Length: 493
Image (tube, rainbow, N blue to C red; front, side, top):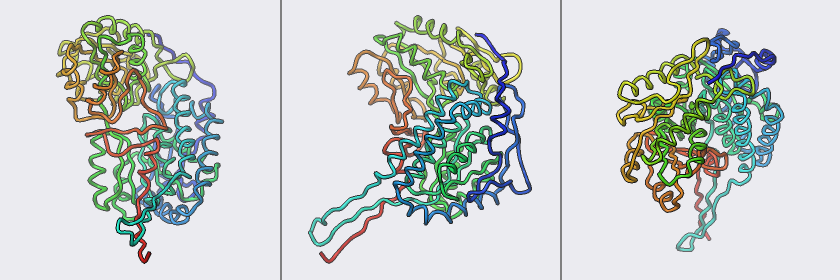
């Protein structure tokens, strides 16, 4: 593992150019009492800038703006709603370099990954720009022939959107895109660690022609204090959240008060299964993608590696060689492949999970500790002989650690993979098509990567089962979360 701390000359320019205020009713404004908080660079532990720290009063003002704009926005021509998203897509792609650097500075991921996320984020706008004009309905003759059934789809109404820090732009476009396409106004609250990408995105949407009040942005260090009054307010009709299962449960309880339509993308504990007949070159490539995308800080990250005993030694060696060769450092230069974790809390959690596994008998093949110096860096790590009772088998690691356990029996490994409250995504590698389909059907997860290390795609439905959430985002299903179905009975025929 090598490191770098090279400085980048455009950092101050990009940070200074990003908005720092709240966006409410189409106007940039300070928070109540001019409250603000500092945004930290996780690669140094130092402040990048300060942004507005919204109060509950600010939140309700944003919701009022969304509610006021809702009737007119619902009537807005679907084609023009789509064109706004299309223009925003083009603007994002034109500014990809600056947006990627801004993301790297506030979240820590290397520039190559930030560029990839900006492109991924933009694709949600392009996809939903095309879905806006495809909102359909139904017409049928009543079974007794005496009437007609008309079925229409209408926007659910003002939506509350809450996004996480690990994909600070893509998780926003994945929610904002279908809301705009469906004719819903919204209030979005980005994670306090990474507000700058969302604020820059809002500025782009304004430039693309989004009317005042259709999107409102409130940044705050106090998410619960800010969001609960809006959730319990009768003007909101939809809640979409991406984050932890623990927070998701609380939001479900709060949403029950007004019976909000809820979609939640929550935690994961993804198994990665390598059978004895797998193409090991492809399996190692897939493992690097599934584990190391976003420094391992992804709900889709491979969390538990189950490798057949006949190929475990070779797979572990190859994976360790790849992991140990990654270049770690401040991600503002192109040669960096692994950046810091988001903060000291996450760094401590990863270290504790590794220590627990080692105490129970796991062996460190490479890595195994934090890096000295500034920032929240943890070495890319491979562990073998990880016992099933290790804590990292039950909790999301959310870091660059690959724990490997061996197996010999297909049914046993399926049972182990399913032995979790989560069910977001699973991965498996095998050359046997029948086995691949059989195991994919048996795995309890909303998504499966069969001989593929990445499942996320704007054109596909993203979401999980069990405690990993409710609803789907992306694909033709994503817009359904922002639409209601109305049935009109026509008589006298």
